[in-house]
Length: 196
Image (cartoon, rainbow, N blue to C red; front, side):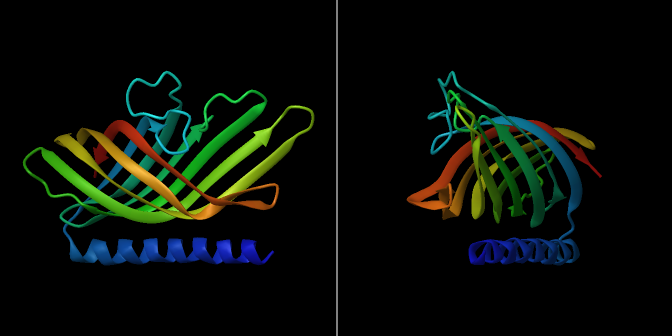
């Protein structure tokens, strides 16, 4: 009960920080708003795909990012990956991320390179379906860092990026904390950008 209350306050704090950053960044920087649906795959760390290349067990990661891009901008990103830990007989797994990021994204003609860093929720789920159904959800506070490139053609563009995610807390299964096992992984993604 105490752990759930602590996690709840962390989520409230992360959302409060995100809203504060949006207000601050919107008034300080002349930034353009954007929405960017994307698709990609996870690699390395705890994912089922250990390397960024030459992996046959890639699992689709879908998401959307909304934010403002400028010298200093902000991004709120939501992503979901089914079968995150790979194909495990008798198990279903997934990871959901909801991250609030500060972006540095200068515009150089139609090209906008960017770097970002942020914090948010990393939710992992493991469901065992062999003899009986056992499931475990982990709502962890975590961070991400990454970068990429947007190539704009007016108000429409394309985007590609690489990111690294890491949770602050250990994973739990059946109420038992697995010591020194903090969820971490990378993600490669590409998508479209609609600027407004």
